Image (cartoon, rainbow, N blue to C red):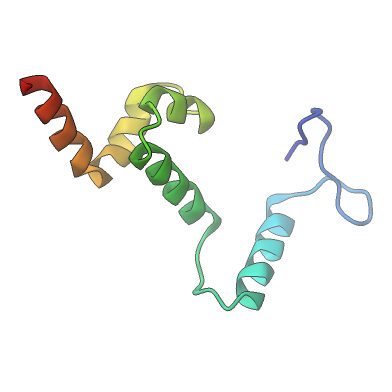
Length: 94
């Protein structure tokens, strides 16, 4: 995990942060907030869905999520958005 300045994030004792530490912290926050157990990836999935629902262009979402190609984004998330298909069809035939 790197900060915006490109330097690795560090743990409290100065060692590089690893996935286990992040997962442990995340799970602790979820438990304290009394939120049903979710995975960190679930937040990513929800964020992509919300961005697409708000009309953010799939190519922008793809870039934000580090997908190599916009098709990955569309294949992964577009099934969640049948309203996008309807809106496109309406615009096409108007």
